[in-house]
Length: 411
Image (tube, rainbow, N blue to C red):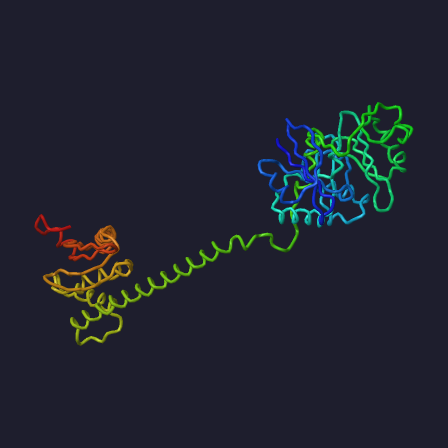
């Protein structure tokens, strides 16, 4: 795994960086501009190192195999030891086994939010965020004690890494006090430090020493700390959107235009369908008036159905009238709103319709449903096809009479 290490000392200043991998096992921090750092991120996992003052490292023992319960219990178990309300803090937790201590990294949520926002503005996507302390050398069974440059208050800060996931910082003059409890728990076998042996607490002066270079960062030391990633489980609570509207503005405008065009098309199609329906109703009314000139027109399709029922009761022979056919075919025509009725005629017990359809397949479907639902036979006698429509002559007869027609008739 190739790593780009970015050390942030302050949000308003340029970072330092180092490049590590299994072949390049160590590197020195190099000051750099954000543009330079961003160019190095391609193909590498990005590790962000924050100031130690921003992160608290600790451990707690809560035996549990349920990770959800563990994440709920640990903040309350540590609440009395923290200076801030736990609602304002983010807890990153790593537990190696169910019975082992849980290693915990704690950071203020707003501080972590600000860091992520800064990186996003710089075009950098972080994969891991750790305190700088966890980048110190971490030999097996050894402590790493590094004296840092004097701060603005003339203090001499020292950072102590006890193992892969634990450590703290304090003033050099208080080092002996802070290490007393740690020595009682588990003394190290050796030390890695940049402090002269005579300046160390007496309890540590008998241990083997290895000189440590604070400007050098090692791959193995960083890799061992990655499981305690401050990004784990973090959800930003910022109200402002991080969506880059400028980048998406052209496609959003295009999508809006396409949507407006489709709404216009749908409106036009709906208007066309309404006109076709009106035309069909006008044709039916004209036929009704010509057939029953003395009848008062109210609802032509319904009145035709009523007249047909009366005719069926009064006669047993076939009546040479278009009403039965129109009455039977009208409901189906209303269902096929994409068919346009251009002309309607009646001759020799046959209803002749000139129809426009989007395709011949649509007419075939109409023909099939006429037989199944309306007990009518629809013959497609002739068709004229253009780029976007088909105009056909349809002959409609009762299914019973159609079945006794001579063979060879159109179907």
